[in-house]
Length: 173
Image 1 (cartoon, rainbow, N blue to C red):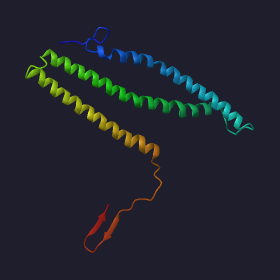
Image 2: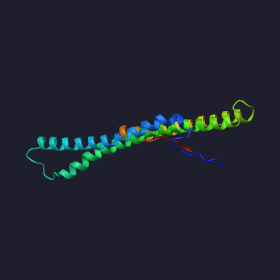
Image 3: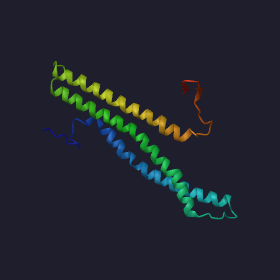
Image 4: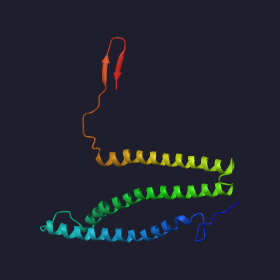
């Protein structure tokens, strides 16, 4: 059984090495995010004290810290994870395409029927898989992102039109 070792000497993943270096450099993003959250927290503390000099009953610094942390850190984290999906799809595409090409070349790339069939069939599977991922992503964006952020639900209650005839009740939805 062939084993693919992922490391410095893997020729299959050699085109992805610059991407791995970019990912390593993005690890500093978390340091920047924590620092930015702390700066926002300190700024909001000073702003709140300057705005309400007389004091507010029930105000506590801990409560403000939790609120600012929840309003700054959590959306930042969820947006980062949401955009990481795109990079995961790109990495998945590159790896599956490299694996398909390596398998097809090991069978003889343009030698009918084996290498060419593997190349065509698995590229079609990659296209179908990525189409499904894009479909699910668009549904998630519509139903989760849009409806939870912009939909208020304040409107007129839907009541279907009903015709109460003598023998049949007609409901038009």
